[in-house]
Image (tube, rainbow, N blue to C red):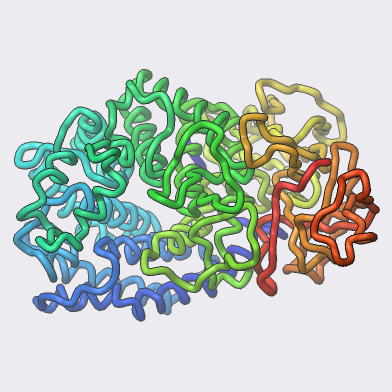
Length: 635
């Protein structure tokens, strides 16, 4: 199946529209200013001017500019009317990028300024192919948004240079995946199948070649090498070596894809890799690749996934660790990894039509990603903890600034994740209000969706077809929904099929009304997860909830709930830009008899009942910093 592109979708949604407006009007401009102040754009100016030395920022900072260009291009593509200021700014950045490109198509400002004679010598760490991939993604987005080829020409020239170099001159996989999925995007927009072949090469060689190991064992003469040992290569050894020996797990290079049984290593690398594999599988029809991905997805979702959709539990290496290792206070759950998971799951949805992938997209979007940006659009979480003592807060920017522009490009392209089509079948995968023009095999449908999500489970779809189109609509039944009722023009229907409500008819001017059970649910973790033992999480619809001290009279660690605790939802338009809070009576320890004592016999302690208030997890840390918990103690 294919997605309905965001240019065919106009989002008009009570929950999402304000966030997308903030992304468009605040975040995009704010991030441009950060690219200027951090020196990222200055690197391009100086490279274009033929200067050398004094590169600013992380050595892959070019990718931050490319992700910003991609986000801005999506904004231009979906705008109600032209934005001359943003158009001009995008063109200016593209001109900078083009001017920094070498005559042979190569483009990387770190190497141009610092080590021009050492291109492609450090695939492990220097991220040339990673940056190239983000350039290509930006170029494809810009071309589709504007019809211009100014950036596409730059990206194509670089891709052609890469095609000349790999594998004839250099045989090896990149240390950070991204080029794979980008090359498939380029193939789709240019019609050049050789880019798919190159993406397939990068996938197949991973785990088969020893290039990454050789670089770490033979650093002299490589880019980033410092004979004093304080260099990028020494840093890479910390994550690529185990017990003094090379181990490629960090970059999913420890074994060929077909031999990998679990999601391992750096979480963002893994997600981008699997997304690229899914793209190649879609282009080649390779069912073995799909089977490998399904096996890895099963491991991730049943043993290595946070309830928020976050992934990658360890701060050291930003990586997966082992099955059921999901700490709360020290959760890493990088925002980029959650976004990468959405990219991968969307591709799996398109390949298989299985709604479980749309379910995970929804969970991750509303929790693991949305928490990554402040309500005002100017502060960001790099890592997303599920408990905090109050010291963990968002930042305005980062030295390694991959997450903020990733959020911006996902939000700006959100319309792409709502609907998919296959022949005369249309799948409604995400419930976000607005209008979509859906191209089907025989005629088009216009879908106008209204929804009360995430606060309530009511959805309506107005279906119009100019020529009474016969088609089948599939409405996803969310994983959090235990009961659904659907009517068409007031008549009840009950046609559920493998996670969807299926409606086949000749559509004219019809109204579908769906109500998805939206009750509050208390969730327990697997007994093997030590961090959730004796605790419960609170969910309602797609949202995970948490406790913040600012809403409660006691420290959050003192509250106890159990499986019978009943929460009452109340929508508060005056709080956190409008949220539904959940209130209940919880058990707390009585302070009676504790004066002058630090410890007492357990049978002397007492408890009492006090009110407790929970807010959506995505909204935490938007007021004064204070302790927070997702998993609440269960007596």
